[in-house]
Image 1 (cartoon, rainbow, N blue to C red):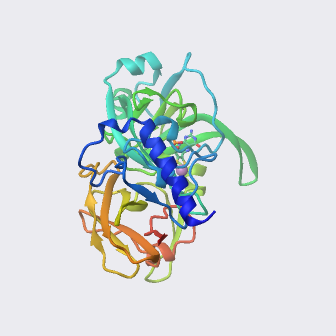
Image 2: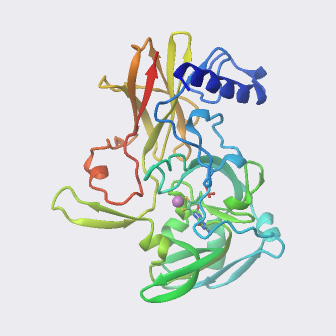
Length: 382
Ligand SMILES: Nc1nc2c(c(=O)[nH]1)N[C@H]1C(S)=C(S)[C@@H](COP(=O)(O)O)O[C@H]1N2
Ligand SMILES: [Mo]
């Protein structure tokens, strides 16, 4: 297919989608909002197109239409598959080093104070390999805060680690033994008492989709997705640090230190500063680059075209909320025809800059997790 025809097909697809969503309410100000595509605007396809959807239901960046990811568009990761579980009789137990063990039914959890939080969750493996590029979502979760549950159970003397288990399980080979294990992840007691952590039973105003943890999951805002345990049915307080597969074997970053050359292994934990050019739109001769940034308290996002200067983007929806992604855009007037490279980088309020691809933080990293380096996308202007 030649480029002109591809463009036409994309335009039709994107416009069709927008029309179906009811574009009648289009506001006059379309700046920095990916979800609002003016009728005369068209998406210019990337040359390095990234497939969305698939088994992991990855985000299609070019077709990104909404700041809140609709529930049927949430990416999903299930290391032991995606169990279809019933809500009937579900209980969440809180045991181990606690003074008052608890067993909480779903009605009991729903009767507790309800809290909603909108947050961006990214898989620690996002962008780490091949086309696994859209493992991030921004959704509005509802549930009850974890901290008061832990408070009620009462961490007993010596309890340092809160371990969360899902009902999903698999066989693991561990030092010569074959054992069955549930998916498990832990947080230290101070990390687990973060008031933003939810035991969630709803997303975007509806039940959790099966693949995203129905009927109950943990939501740990500000952390890579692996911390947000799905199909949650057991919380244990331990006296020792938990070294399960998803803490200490998988989701471990191996990186060489720039000074001294020492190799260090760290468990994937808190999210990292990140950004992504999502798409370029064209309105006559006016082009605009749109994208998203997340993983830090953002101060600004900058965009570079080819080897030009870094230019500040206009921040849009999500600005000022460190737990959600922020949409951004940059006007790109009258680009020369031919191929161009577009790179974005996020900068945090503490001055942290999203690392370049050749930054030692990225270049000296041997594993694919925490791949938050700047990404360059290619586009042809005709
Ligand atoms: N029980 C359970 N919880 C889990 C997982 C899992 O395999 N089993 N995968 C984790 C990983 S690696 C990620 S990235 C997030 C993804 O959440 P989502 O599938 O709702 O997008 O779920 C986390 N919680
Ligand atoms: Mo993940």
